[in-house]
Length: 496
Ligand SMILES: [Zn+2]
Image 1 (cartoon, rainbow, N blue to C red):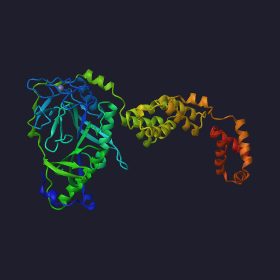
Image 2 (cartoon, rainbow, N blue to C red):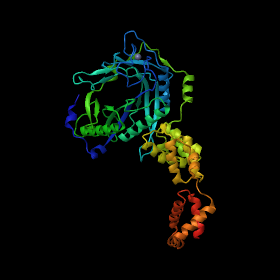
Image 3 (cartoon, protein in one colour):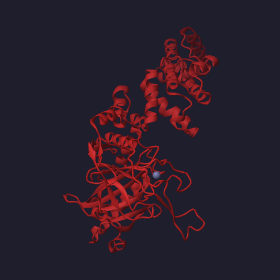
Image 4 (tube, rainbow, N blue to C red):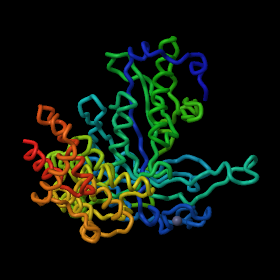
């Protein structure tokens, strides 16, 4: 439904936008990584031939009865705990009735007035602003619909097809409070939410594969006004970039409508990434349009204290806590701590390497710098690193205690990456051990000073930075094997 206001109103200028405040809430659907679907034993997997992972239950055949997947409930509880929610001991499934070709039952099984979890929060940080908590209203469980396929067949110009392999996949819907005020905050919220769920291990959260889907509710109000403006729901935000672009466009559009005396219509809009615009799709449904009622084929979901306690005790450390621990215990800069908690695999890798090396900050440099560089070059993720965390830790330990110079360690790491060998065996075989022997270094230092009288003179007349030149010469003479600290010591002694 295209409203008149859309067509007529120009986008707002920056000055106009500054007079308003945006109010943003997100509804995020996350597909849980179970082996089977939520109410039947069909595989919960994709890429198979269309309509092969189906059965009478997920096809909505009359008389077929759903059975709740215990693992799906457990993942949903983990998602709730990862997002600081209170898990309700009793929740109730409900039918959400609507007609769509990819929904063979004619209703979705969801949860309505008694959801699985409530009252959560995520702490987000936008650069240059203090941390802010965004509330989570509720998390509920539901089954997914199938997929309509509009292209890819030779008669696709005339027909659309339906693939029901996804029908009945387990989802959680995570509804935030309308507490975000900018596209940057929305971006930060979704990033932190995704990371927390990945750490909890409940979903891959791969947006490209549709494992994480996001709708945004956006409204604007004049600054200082307490009540909310009319909200518009934006769908089809299938990347972080589109989420940000769509929200910014929508704020500008709504302010433009308001500033030119128009009225914002409550509706659902679709983001078009090619145009970079949101387009009116349909007037927004109200909850009563869905005729919710308790699902008669499922008993209420009861979660015992024991079950909840068991899930709680098995929860891994969440990314926010891990960042704090890396900063406090390992002395990492906030930036490095954030990079190293970019995924659970990377955080686990770094943690183990740091413990092995005994020098967490140096380990951070080697993990973020050289190792990530090698991985990137080989198109690999940290999970597939040919250098294990323990082996990287051993290498860093050798650098930290002066057995191997930083320069040679780079070459050693490259060889470890290629062959999977340990640093110790490469260093021994190739005779790369650092030269720390004072007698040997003094002899080399003497030769270097003698060969460069001009620089020696400069040093003695006060230009002490020339020492770097001499250290470089000693390194060259030893093919990078001189321990730089010991070499500097020897040179200083010699140069007076
Ligand atoms: Zn099935």
